[in-house]
Length: 211
Image 1 (cartoon, rainbow, N blue to C red):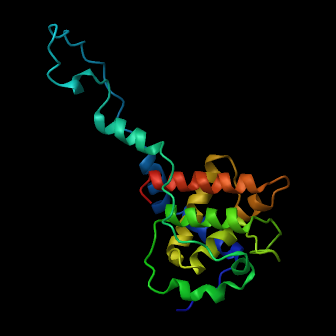
Image 2 (image 1 turned 180 degrees about the vertical axis):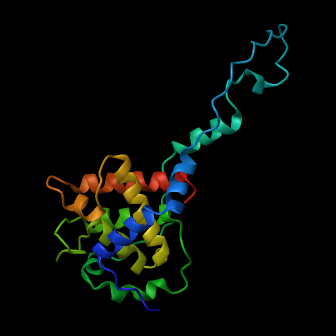
Image 3 (image 1 turned 135 degrees about the vertical axis):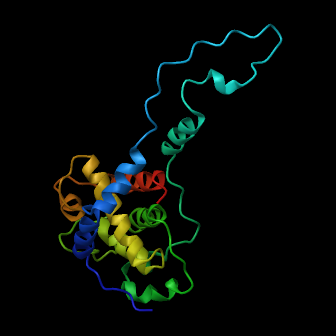
């Protein structure tokens, strides 16, 4: 199976273009919309007689049950990816094309799950911020490099990689960063903990939107 040869900066640019489309903005803004503000609260129900239960516990709630469930789900962390160990340290330094066989028979993934694998790569193989390099001599990846490597290891299609990158940019915008992922990754003072936190936040955001 042919694997598209993308650089981290090309992925960064593609993800930015997707993020700026009207369709993507509809996705991002749509999941954040909550139910209409409730009207005046209903009059308190009369207390039941001693020893009797209320006829319907829902009457005691000030907001709809569906909204309570949605709010609770949005606070949950993204589900971890299914157990599928990464290659060891030797695998980290080998060219990604060596791992192409791992894509055989693999289905597509949601962007949130793909981001989970990218995080695993950053955590196990390391993070690096050398300008314009997917990885360093030790096999550590930049953030975009981790997305590309996850795809080349069999975790998600090129479309999924692009969407995962767009979710990263969406998260960066929410944090006030106006640029692309690469410059954020290379910013002075950036740390591996920052990179992992960004991927975690983007994965949670994508999962909350059902992606």
